[in-house]
Image (cartoon, rainbow, N blue to C red; front, side, top):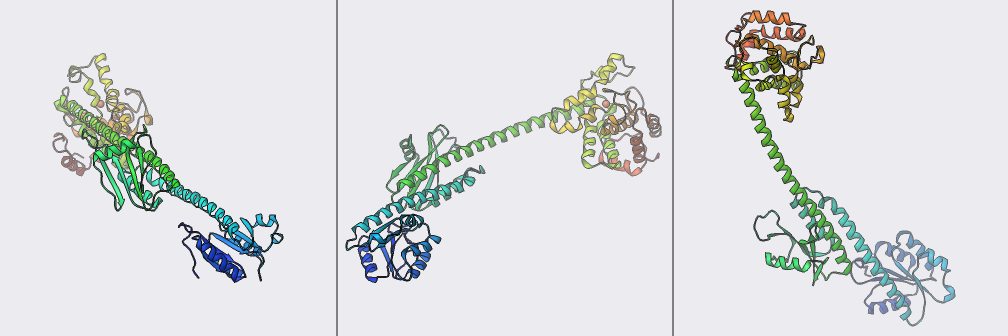
Length: 507
Ligand SMILES: [Fe+2]
């Protein structure tokens, strides 16, 4: 005997007829086979249950009065594992029909009083077939929607246009039995004056179209949700203004059914939205990239300008040339000797390099004045730490060093400028730069005085401990500069920046 497992997908419907009377089952088999049904027969109730369990029947026609098991008992067992099969109960006489309550409880779709004519039974079976067809359509639609839902994360993932189009082709070809899927889209990246399209396809048997044919098809898709041509379903891909900018063309194995077209229209709306999102995302990324580049150029030119300003400040006074490089070097090495972390040391190095950049705003006649400054002139000098911090604040990467630049002329005793901070209220980076700055100022020849000898400078630092300078930092500096290898390394690291009067052997 045959077992029809394929029937829920095909057009044929399968029936199992169960009766302990073989004549009845073979009569029913012949009758319904003539109408195109696939019919199996069974005369043993238990074996019938097994066959339903293993097979995939659409309809069960069974006798009510059988031995050793009655029809309602068979149905009760079948319903424990199969709620989908349609069941029609055959009875010898109306009076033998089980109560309506039992028929409802067992979900029996109808009963038939046996007679020589089967037209009544055929009507009942046809009614079941109609319901099965509707259920299959609903199930197909539901499964399709579920597949669309499952594909949405890939379609909406905004990774790249290629990734999205791949996901669309993959999902479209899995939704319906088809031979090919073609996705044609407007190539927005093309600079050509006329519209340019590109296509991606999967499957076989599709034909390519030139731009004119694509344009004609797009025109015919305006205001439509789909276009059906023989086995082809063509769905518009719409932009945000609901204008077709491309299409998805699916060639099915058979002429499309109504519910399949509906399903593809749902899918097409999703892909339009996903493609628009991806397009916007790509545009946004391009704009962001351009913005980043513009910002980077701006930042580089500003950095260049600040670096130039720093060199200009150093170069203004021939005697201070290399000053900020040395301050930076001393300060970074003090920070290292104090055991600070690399970020702290880098802040100190950078702040040392740029600490005096605000001096650019001081007129040369004041900055380079050999004699005593007037109160107004001194006031101009006192502004340079705050001016420097302001200049540097434009670039975000300078933000961590602004406090050090602003406070490098503060004093431990609170008599410094610009804010009159005292003790630990002065950022440590600034206190370190103050020591390095003071030492280098003393050991460089200035317009207005000769440089101090190394020993004299060390003595001066000692004198300033606790008033102008942080004693702990002065001591760290003194210990560091008494080591000859420090000077040897400085000569190596800063060629051309060392001051000749420094004698490392004078420890
Ligand atoms: Fe300064």
